[in-house]
Length: 391
Image 1 (tube, rainbow, N blue to C red):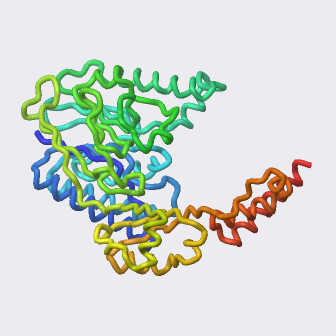
Image 2: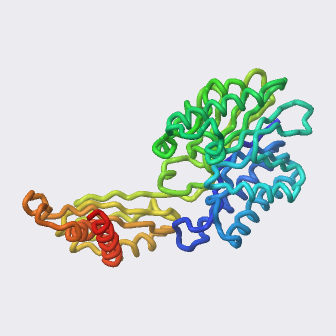
Image 3: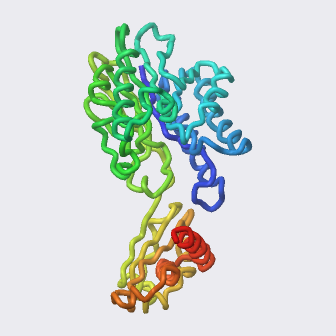
């Protein structure tokens, strides 16, 4: 039996791109490719481990388009006779109401879980799937035993709850049991997401070992963590944090299943590339002299340029000409061209620094950071309010 394991599609509008819908179309295109591959591989079961959507709180027009895209994907698999189990993910991404709506559609062969439970499958016990959706922290805050706890104790108590719930799900089940969840696993490699995942409740290795296979969503870095825990990663890149991540999904084969899954293959997807170009003084000088390469590596990519140079070079540098060259070379979208200019006259003198009032210092900082004048004025107004309030 082949089982496809995928998560973190994050359908949504408003990603940086040439149009508000461009990246939504990228996600849809990649997910259609995934569906075709799942069908061609002969998978009998698909586990979608949460975060179908980008944002939980959106206008009805946008929500309708996003739900429609996900439902079309599910129907594509359903029409091919494939069983699909879906769980909701992080509450800030996945509105529970959207998943309830999809469940009410009663798509043949599609089961949707927003609370812990055991999926029923027509495979006569060949495999059992225990579902543990993403955690809604606010629901815990309403419980008496969580009231007034400091953050670290609050998260530790939620972690204990996860372990206890896993124990309850596993109890009484015989045969191979898969846990599908949307959580941080304590042995996972998180990389870029480290800071974002601090103080999160975690799936402990103790809890994971209660199951034969654990299929997770949430971390966008595909990996086998521990002995039996897989993250599918995201099938499409969403930002520059995913630049060096390989997007895709897993196919687990249970044909030789004994005490663990013997065959698991990672399938790479044709996702949009992100490309960062870092320049220094020499690169800027080469550009000004017309000696820069042809940007052959940026075709169809989302590009950003970060450069550091002297104030003198900055005066000679024309961003618009560089942006045009990037588009001429085939860039899909130029996200930013950002400078870190080495000022020749920095404000370092103690007496000069002390001589500046807060509004003047704020204006100098804003100019140094190349913030728009209108935004600097707004920041100064807010600073004035704060200063008046503190007197």
